[in-house]
Each structure stands twice: as structure tokens, then as C-alpha cells.
Length: 121
Length: 92
Image 1 (cartoon, each protein chain N blue to C red):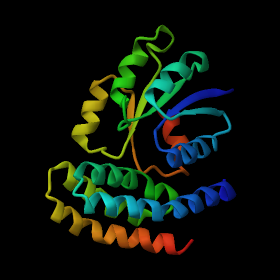
Image 2 (spheres, rainbow over the protein chains, first blue to last red):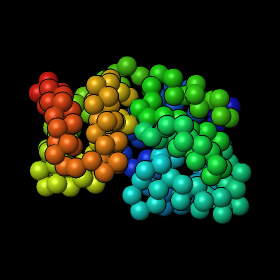
Image 3 (cartoon, rainbow over the protein chains, first blue to last red):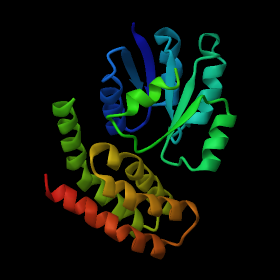
């Protein structure tokens, strides 16, 4: 069973290691985007089962991208998990209040990222 | 995974010198926002590539910059991070 994921992060290094780490799970098929705008263009056709969104991105940050994703009928209820280097308790509460399913702290462990994402599906 | 991860780790190592220079330039220019942004990226990435000290040293710099610390304090906080990046870059 293939589970499509969308990973959105402006940092090339992190996108590459995240895709590699997520595809350790043989069921995961991952598409990566480098910006919120690119994610909004790609997501409807890709129809991901879950979207991983970096919080701090230029032009359109993760929370702003989430708002726009929710306006797309195909993605109105897709689970969104934020990835952030600022994962302190207050920030987690703020991000979850925006409608996120979960928050994953950066730096993540590439060996356990796929298992962590599984818990949000 | 092992071979691919080694390649990504090597590429990260190769970019350490660029990041060192970018952070050093931001601090020399008194650009706290740029220093915060670079520190944020380093804090969120280093350990994922097997360089946990980069993340550990970058986090307090990012937090201090975000809290409005003055540039002299940021330069002081950045010293061990710059040294670590230099060490990683030299090992290429």
C-alpha cells in the first residue's frame, strides 16, 4: 500500500535527508517542495495522505501555507504536521491550535523519522 | 540508506565552510536577523547529518538573536559554533 507524503522545506539539505529518511518506510512515497507556493501548486494533484511543513520559510511560512492548503477542497482535511527547530511547549501549543495534527522537532533523527510520521496517520 | 546518508553528510560537510563565512559576515555587518536565520538553519539541521554539536551550539545563538541580544553578545556566542564549522570544513 503506497502512502503519499508531501514534504515542504526551503532548505535543500533537509529536504534531501528527509526524503531519504521517510522512504526507509517502504510504503511511503514522498514528493518534496521548496516553498509554500510550490506546495500549494503540487498538493492537489499529488493528493498526499499527510503533509509535513517546515515552519520558518521565506515569503510564505508554514502556518500561512497551512491556511492556504485548507482553502483547497482536496486538502481541507489532510493531516498536516509541522517541522520546526523551535519546538518548545508554547510553540507546539500555538502550532497545534492552528489545526496541525502534530509537531516534529528539528533536528530530527533520520533513522526514526518515518516511524514518527506513521504515528500521525 | 548508509551510502546515501554518507553522501548527504559529506555534502553538508562541504557546505560548512560557506555557512561559516555567511555567519561570520552577518556578525561582522551587525546583521542580527541574518545571524539568527543562519543559526536557525544550523540548529535545525546539524544533528540530522551527524553533527550534533552544530545544533547544540547554534540553538543558543538563534535564541539570543531572537530575544534581541546585542551584536557583541551574539559574536561571543557564535565563537564556538564558528570554530566547530571550521573544524568540520577542514575535515573535507
